[in-house]
Length: 238
Image (cartoon, rainbow, N blue to C red):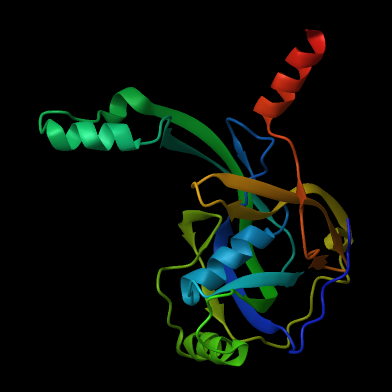
């Protein structure tokens, strides 16, 4: 996997985000929520899109600096076990007497997350083929919104309960002098690609924190889904 970034003619956009709590759930944890030690590139991209988004371009996360020590917290929360489907919504519209009983669908789950977090996000803008303005125009719009504290929707840190503050870059240094400055983080979500049919393709990369900085490769690796692995094993068995 190529670890170098393609050439960009401009210096990266820089936005700092912080919050009291965060949880960037590791994919291997099925029933419990256990966070990565740092924000993921996909979560960082979601924060930028909440501040300023247009269908004419994509944000490319270049690197993320961790500005505060990694600190943990644990809580147990009441959650629901199922998600509302399109079919259920259609049936609810057709039948006003249909009700969802949260008491019958409630489950307690443990969450291990991060507290008192701060990150500096470096990103580039990649124009799409139907872009109607220049890259500099979109960059300036993002900067103006960051300066004003404006956003289309409230940015959050992993889950919507943990809202994020954002602003211009400061002179704060990454956590380069601490014991948690260097750490292998394992396989991390890089990005999600959406196909014309609405399907999703997940891309991953091997993440590592070096001197308090997470460097993000330009592309992630596509890993086979659990269903594809099972089908392959069944075919081999036959």
